[in-house]
Image (cartoon, rainbow, N blue to C red; front, top):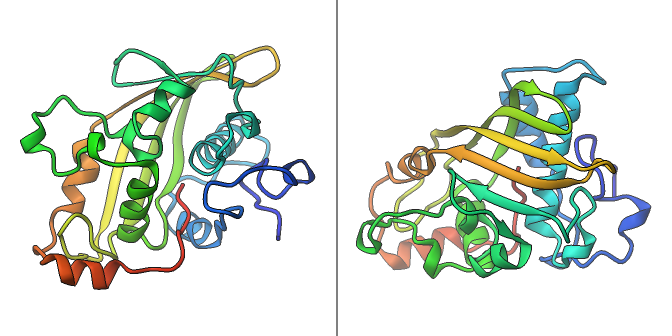
Length: 233
């Protein structure tokens, strides 16, 4: 497999024994194309912004696709914690109990009856299927600004994708869905990530996925049937 120009620890020699969540390393060709066509910033090679952007893409790939914590090379699995919108930080095992995948990032205090996407009812696999179906070309990410460099990296990001598949009973719109936010990565002396914090409004993502007309369950099942789990990030 060709080397991915934005992500480390994917097709390298050191990944021979990596256990991949979906059986094989993810292919980012489609989302890389989406990224290159839709990004608003092109950072100079070797710049702090480019390094942070590639680190974020590598971290995201490992978090979503590597099944064993010990296979994650961008983080220190023993020290790593993550928090969302000021909530209490969780370690990797606690994060997995929240459902893994998108579920950690879509935590909410909304009453259950108002949750169009309820992370408490989703698994890592079901959430992955839901979003890769809605975004068949992937959900690209770019860094818009880096406010501080290591050891505590603070950055503004943009995520975007095109809703070309159904989501939770809503028909595809073909429209771009965007999400902006702030991320904080704390690195240790070995440049491993030991802490992440994110601040963003999940409603900006979900709102864009609910614009389409309502589908009945049989129509959605027919539209969303796909033999391949596509990549994100």
